[in-house]
Length: 308
Image (cartoon, rainbow, N blue to C red):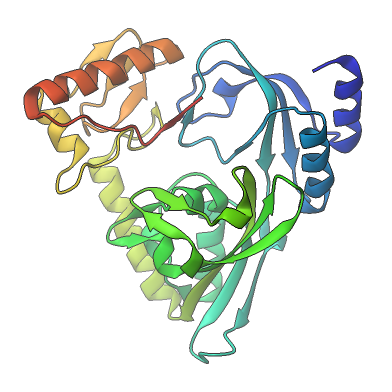
């Protein structure tokens, strides 16, 4: 990006951070730098921004809450966009078709934790299974996040997107192909797009039952998953009919350490950063786990974490 382009980007997005260290924005606390990172709180600026990026032939990438990513070392060229959202970005209305159902519309940059707290206060149930899931709502939709018997696709009604041409597109959830930890959007979204808002179907229930269910789920997470350490959550996808954590444990890798990267002794599917792990150490450990598991079971584990 030349100096003229840098100045234009600063005019479009005053919050530009140059050479942002992604270790500060990743839950793994490791990663290289990106050429430019912009934080967007108002999606109204996005059409002009994307149109300019496409016109200048500058590569761009959307980032969520940083809970499921790993950037390799070095400088990554292009513009990385982080959406930010708050309580003002959450609204709800009664469904016109089902009186007992409420439609909750939420900005993609809102954190999952904030959305769940809002739902608890409004006594709206249906998303309790997401308790303890880090990151943003947009990232959860893109990954079809799920746990404890529920997935985002179960409650999703509509997704509002902005495509690479700078046009807003509304996509019914029925037009999206949901798979395990994957959401495949229809062609009108184009190859590159940004999820800006989502709509979930929920129902009125008591705050006591919502709170109890969320506490139960969080307690189960704490009992099974490592806490107080840097990680990206489940590192590998579960293969059909099995669990990555079980296969990793079967291969004798719980607690295995490579440099400052370690397989959690509490849960085999968590790679944790002991303090100063480099992206290369984490990736080397990833490959070693895949090789050992494949040698023991014939299964090649696929990363759930997105690697840039």
